[in-house]
Length: 353
Image (spheres, one colour):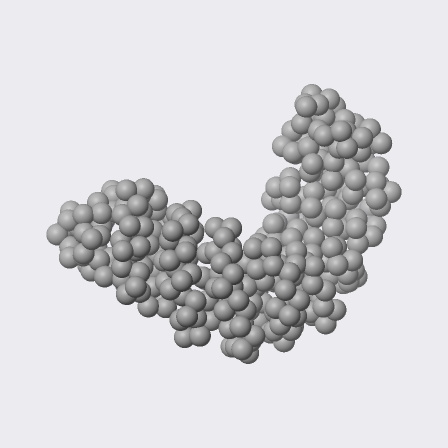
């Protein structure tokens, strides 16, 4: 901490990178990171491309947002980007997007630099690059066309993480390219045994959002999700079942195992995820009363936490399967009466019915 000011430019960048790699808690070591950030700010102009990329990556990994340093990194990256290699471009794009600092000028410059170099990028670098543009809600047509070619030509080299990142990112960017979707679903089907819950949830959400149906993929994904049911985080479980519901793909084993797993962890479900889960199970015509009763009892104690659309979705889900939890419905009506301005005319109509 005391020596940070005497570090060389490369030493500052390397130290931040090492601490981020070790996942040191920046909030717990505030004084240390304030000293490093100040040292980095004073020496940023002397950073080489790798030091710029490593510092940005460290800040994002540590969730360390120091605006003066971030702005200096943006300026220096723009000035020296012609000297960036593939890893530098991918790391800077990922890091600045993670920090919400990938502005239009930087994105255009990164896209222009990366597009001709894309065939020499590693698959994970390409995935990180596309993710950065998706998070920033900026589709660069030439870059995305080049990415699509890379995916098609290197499908066998793509990991489950890459495949899920591509599916999620292209969905976020509004893509509905049938050939790309078919390529991604085929690659995912063949590598299904390697998917973890987070990757599987993202893969399913992406393909469902792009409205690409592949029965071999859905069959493989349902089997994998059933085996992993106990490991899904609440949002992952909701997104997974939402995807199957959108495809109207009801797998009995998946429904039973996911129902047991989600009921066991119902307290950890945010109200939005809970509403999505109920909608998904009811859409798939899962009719086990104990499942709905358990969630109705849980939701009843959290009625003020529900946003109006989520509360209406939960009520719709119960009605769809013919389940009428009277205490919950009475509580929901009373809660809605306290905040009538939050409900649209259509939502109010559902509540009344």
